Image 1: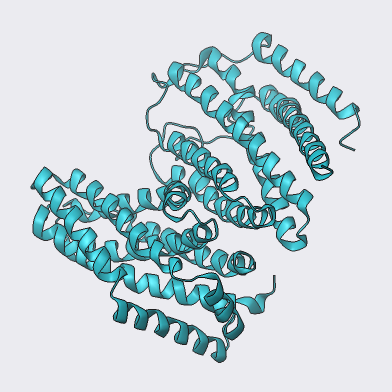
Image 2 (image 1 turned 90 degrees about the horizontal axis):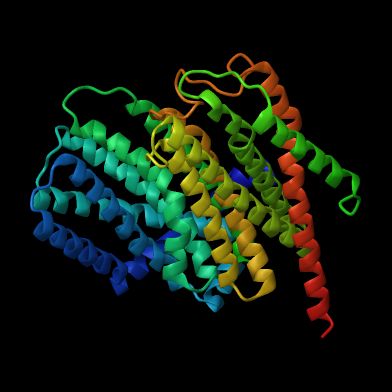
Length: 228
Length: 223
């Protein structure tokens, strides 16, 4: 491993941007995963609304993060499905593996950010808002959505190579994501309580370190996944 | 070196001493803990040995990615499997200990949760391996997952339980692993006898399994 692996030269930035643009364009033209996942989120939250109506804060919080988890699995799992072998070869010849995974990470981050905003909105609309600091909660959930998307992007990359996408993704991803989910739930509890709680910044710092680690690992390890 | 016998004998002798000390040796009888402190030679050691095996496993995974040698993959897999066995033993001995000190086998303590997550992560490693039929692809993908999982495991086991309230030693104001907190004699036996003993036992199991794997591959390779 060499340190230059982490330094992005402008040409690579261009590659990443192009790959990202390709993903966005595909998304706009096919409108497959975006609306699919929004519908998934809306219907699952609606079912929750029918089942619970206005749950208390602890239940609200738990339901929200579980729902986020499933939305993330659904949104991110699709990102490697459409890349078949021939196309991967093509990407490999025009860009590097590193550019490819970074573009995917970025794309899934944006996708998950949108999904998070939609699901927060639906949750607030349908399940009520038991929290005291709504803006803080929205910030935390966006932050959490990004963290989830990073981990699941890499897990999806592994699962895509193992072929049996959906099942293997849940098996690999769920245990890996529990630590972050625990931290996120602890973090969002701060938004629910009316008394000031310390520890917000230290958990955010820890989660950011987590994200940086996941990105670094993805960049280092993805080239090995890519080769066939 | 692995075919030699001396380290196996050393391992057995160390384990015999561990068991004699563990069941018959003199231990300080502190409130709450009482005689359960004897589990120190078993429960804590399981986790130490598990960590050693997982570290060895991840080292072989890195080695595999760098060299693409098939043997490294087999080593990584077998060490991970031994690690899983030790983690299962660790969680069992831990919950027995918890039953007599905390009052219940399982109380959703952060440390217990972290341990359960670690076991799930490594079981997923085994499932992932089995799901890929192609040998080279399996080796590469599972090596990648092994490294990724290992990096995620550290925060699980070491950082998060320290951030939240836990009954388990090693938390806030509840230290562990320094000679002032544990009886010095116990600490010495733990470090010099119990940990090497159990680790050698695990190493023996692993080396046998690795030899079996190689024999099997030789057998099927020549068919």
